[in-house]
Length: 310
Image 1: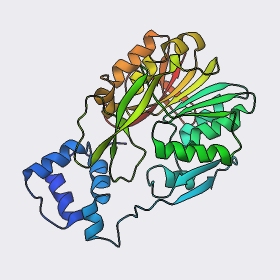
Image 2: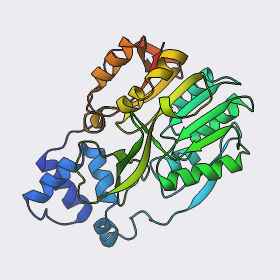
Image 3: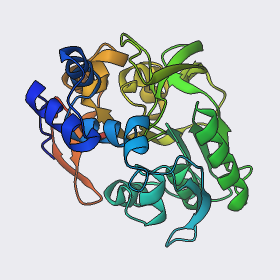
Image 4: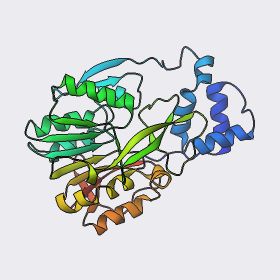
């Protein structure tokens, strides 16, 4: 998908259209342009703002949490928040990342040990728990307390204790702690990122979380499959899993956040793919539920699912 780049004229027009006023000063336009990488991000930011809710109470989204159990076609039960319009609502409607889920279902087998990093409410972790069965294991890493709480409820809903193991930790390249940057109000409350080199902008706050390198975590081995959706920390998490990659040779599905990689990991998508190639992995675009054509780069903006095959 091609995203519309922002310009001062476009930002000012969005303020007029959604907030019914002129921009306060050039500084407001510049701040929004630096905070939002493209037009969809700007739209989400303004629609989730207190000012939009105050001016348009009949149109504004509710901030009230509304937890429901979404039952998927395979019987997996996921606890989602209907205030989470980016992930929770699409899961409930069975429209979220269908290609990625089809790929996971095609490669994960009974008895395997697998990883889900950036597990959120547990759509993938719980689905993989059903796939690996009682002789396998899923190690789900989710550092944010709210989302980890949803996953914990989902584990109980599915009777997956002993199969799906929740680690309230962010996977990086070292053990310790770090700051996660989250939006105060957002259509996507799970879109938290490690602070890295990025500043904390207006409307954001920092939350302290635990970090770990996968190589140092006591998990069942060998790892057959890894899914990473860690908002720009992909390179850090993979460096922290160097031994697992070398010894276990798992298949990987990585959501490459091209915009955030340099901010969080100090890498680009191209250098990440090259680093994996040096370790004997070939990158493929995700096709219709399968590994597509080999690639050596992805677009410099947006989020791109990439399959790494040993």
